[in-house]
Image 1 (cartoon, rainbow, N blue to C red):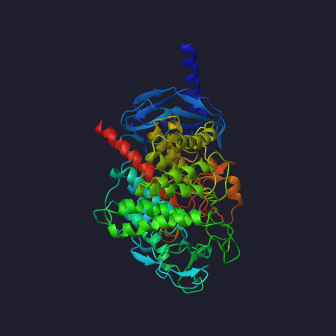
Image 2: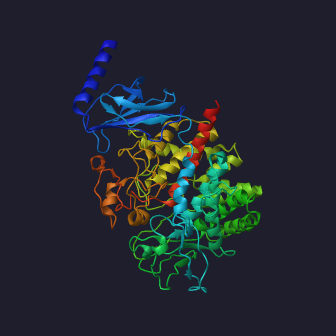
Image 3: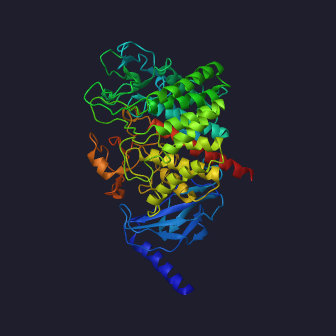
Length: 592
C-alpha cells in the first residue's frame, strides 16, 4: 500500500513537471504567517491534474517540511484543478517557498513579526485622503465648503464644514463612511492599543505629538463630524455629489463649480427622499445617519478625554442627543446622487441604533442603554448580506455589526448575541467551504470591504467565545486580501513592499502625478455580470491578469476599472482592527 502511494505521488509530481510548469501557480499570503496560525496555500492549474503532496523549502532550497494534507476542489473560476495545501503544523520561523514538482510559490515569511507596523501602514492612505489641509500634498483643498441644500429655511447659507476625508478617488464626503471609519479606527485602538505608534503630528505632518497616530486620524474625522452636527437635531449627511465626477485632477486644484464658485453643496438630513438633480434616493428616516453620529461621538468622548477634555465633553453631549434624534424618525438616510444612478443604498438602520445604544452604555453605565441595545440586536440578529449571493451597492452597511461585539463585552454571559455572531459567520462559511479559497462573500462592488468585515467578526468571535469553528475561514479571508486569491495579488497598495500589489489604482493622485495610494485597500473582485453592466468602465493599460479572469469574477489592476481597483477610505480603516490584533498576537509569541 505504501509503495502504491509513493508511485501515485511520483506520477503526479512528474505530471506537473512535464505539462503544467507555465499553467499552474501556488497562491500564498504574501505578507506571511504567524507561527501558531492556520496556514494554507492554494495550488491552481489550467490543466486537469492530481497532486498528493507538497514540499516547503528554505532559502537554501533545503526541504524542511513535506505536507500531505491536500484537499482537491476541482474546477474553480479560470482553473480546471485546484487544491488547498494545509501546512499549519509547520511553525518554524524563516523565509520559505512551497513547491509541487517544478511549480513553486513566491517567498513568504513565518515569524511573530509579520504584521508588525501594518495597522500604522494603512494610515498612510487615510492621511492622503484628508480634506482641508492635506499633509501628503502639503497643501489645502476645499476650504470654501460649503453651502446648505435641502434645509427648509437655511438653503443657500454658508456653513464651515471643511475637513474630514475624501471618500475614494472622488472628492465626495459622506457621513455614512466617515463616521464608520472613525469608529472602526477608534475601536481598533481600544482593543489593541499597543499596536500603534506615534510618528505623526495631529495635522498629519511627520513628528511625534504624544498621541497615537490612529487617534490623531480618528480625531481628524471627529472634528469634521462635529462641524456636520453643529447643533442639536441639525445634521448634514454629505458634501458634494456626483457632479464631482468631472475628470481626474488633484484635490487642491479642484475647480468643479456647483453654482456658488468653489463652495460645494452640504446636504441637510431631512428624513425624506433627496436628490436635487435627475435621481432621487430612497431615504425613509434619519436613524442610520444620526445613530452613526451617536456611536462615533460616544467612543470618541471616551478615548479623547485624556488628550482633548473640552472636545470630549462637547461630543459626549452630542452623542446622547444624536441617539435620541435617531429614534425620533426611524428609517434609513441614504446618500444622494445627481447625474448618475449610483449612490450608497443603505437599507438597514437597526444595527446603527444597536451600536449607538451599546456605546452609550459603555460611556454612561446607564442600564437602559444596554437593554435597548439588546432589543435592537434581536430585531436584526445577522447583518443581511451574510450568506447572500448579491446585494445593491452598500445596501447592508456597515458591513460589520460591532453593536453585537460591544454587548458581549459589556455582558459576557449573553449567549443570544454570541449566537447571532455565530449565525452570520456560519452563513459565510456555508457559501465558501466548497471552493479552494474558502471565500464565502458575494463579489459585489467593494467585495474586499466584506472580506475585511468577515475576518474581523470571525477573529472577535473566536477571541470572545473561545470557539475556533471558523478559524480556517478566518485565516482564508485574511490570506485572500494578501495574495491567496485567483489573481495572486495583495489588495493593499504597497503591502508587502516586495509583493504583487495594485500598482495602477483608480486615483487622480496616481494618474496625474504617479503618487501611489500607499496603504489603501482597493475595492476587490466583482462579479463579471456587474462589471459588464457598470457604466464608464474601460481597461486602459491592458489586463496583466487576463488568464485568471473568469465568467464568475474579475479583478483588474488598471486605473480605468473603478469597480475593482479604486481604494476606499472606509475599507482601509476597517483593516486597522485585524492588522493590529494580529500584531498583538505576534507580540505575545515573541514573549513566549
